[in-house]
Image (tube, rainbow, N blue to C red):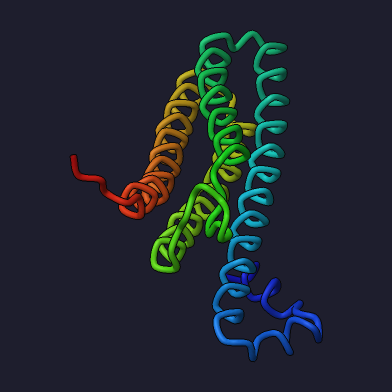
Length: 180
């Protein structure tokens, strides 16, 4: 919620005056929430990219030390991490404006923030796991760590899928029904 609060606090004088126009306040608040949603996901994508860089350096060290089994497992984790990053960058953004094709209501946007909090926590876990793996030396331990990282990244991708499902469900329920 910190990003949302920063965006909300950055209103200029014009926006504060416009806030007294009926309907404008709710619309503008939703637009700011949408921007906060976009900023948060782009920030998370950048941070996950930093972890991808650390994972790449770890893979280089594993290759240099001849730890091929662990290297293969870490490569699978790298692919899962890249998938998550790509999905975050290409995701539909929170609330859409009046004329956008995709509409997301406030209730659904609140649900998105819950999923985003899970992604923030997951980022911290990914970072910690990569740091632990950098200090491991035994093949069996490295392989187990890679498998744990894979499991975590699968979970984060599932979380992101559920996040997208909130948007898709809202889009489906907001479409007018036609009867033949």
